[in-house]
Length: 159
Figure 1 (cartoon, one colour):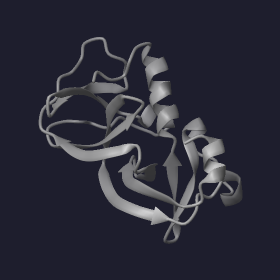
Figure 2: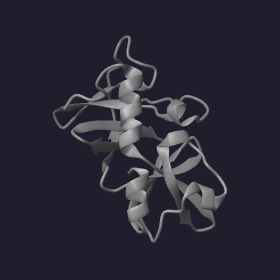
Figure 3: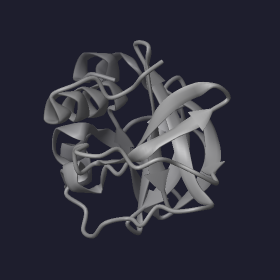
Figure 4: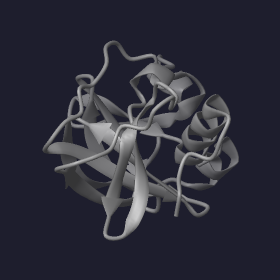
């Protein structure tokens, strides 16, 4: 979701998840499903953010660790039984390695970073969603996937 789309959009339905102890959200239009991968294959010489690839009902899908690009600490160990959020945009499909899913929720508005007094996660945060007493960062999936493609110097997904 670009800034121009954000200005036009007041209400949003989002899929919320945990990553590095932080709460994030993506609009449901980008979220496809939550999966638990029992097996995946490590790809030799792949960029650091590519954990591996897995078979998702006959399609090969990359499993990505987006912590570094979001400026989050540590590496998420992905292994047997790891949870991932499958996102899709413009024919590109990828699985983001996550710590846990918080569910689907509707929000009345997206709060711009300036109004909330904070700007986090670089260019990949669109705005903030108020959830109880806290704030959840709404991610810009197209920008995130594009940055991962550019950083990899190749296409992120095979579909």
